[in-house]
Amino acid sequence: MRARATPGSCRRRGTVAVMSVCAFLAACGGSPGEREFTPSGAVGGRTPAGTEAARPPGPETVSAGPGLKVQTEWPSGLDASNASIVKAFADYYAARWRAVGSLGKDKSYLDSVEDAAARDAYSWVRGFTAGKWSARGVAKLYSLRVASVEGHGAQIDACVDESGVRVTNRSGAPVSAQPAWTKPPRSTYFQVAAVRQGDDGTWRITLFRHASYPDERAKECVR
Image (cartoon, rainbow, N blue to C red):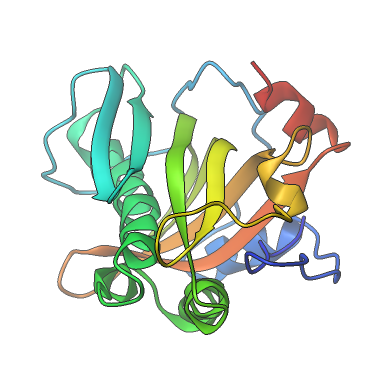
């Protein structure tokens, strides 16, 4: 599992096992059991306190900027506790694309992350702004599931399809050399996020990992 890269490149090449997420969960109160990845979006794990109302299952598309949209496919079967956890990641994913669509002006994505995830998220957005890039198209998030919950920590698994995204210049014209992550099979990947519930009750992401093609988990995300 790897940290997702900045837009022009290039992914970070260091390989980190899923146990990085498991170690985080253990530190927050226990050791998560093995969970099988199910692209259908099944929900697992114990449910902590939470009050977030579950979204109606199915796709929801929101604008992230001029010509840029994020489509989230909300899973069925979420109770209020797991809905809060899933929403934490889905909100971040939409917010990071808003940062890109606003040319870095929208920084709300930083409210959803902390620790290593905050550094990775900032670097990812910075990859666009430093290169004077933006994006157009549709980024898709689906097969969201709460893989495990231990105390104040949880793991979220999801599938991401960014084949519908094109990197552009600030005027919205696609750049001639599109990065590899916009093209199949690299454009579809399996995402893992570790989240932690703060004293204010808010779930924030602390760690990102992903698996790209030809990893079997990424292959299972392909539709």
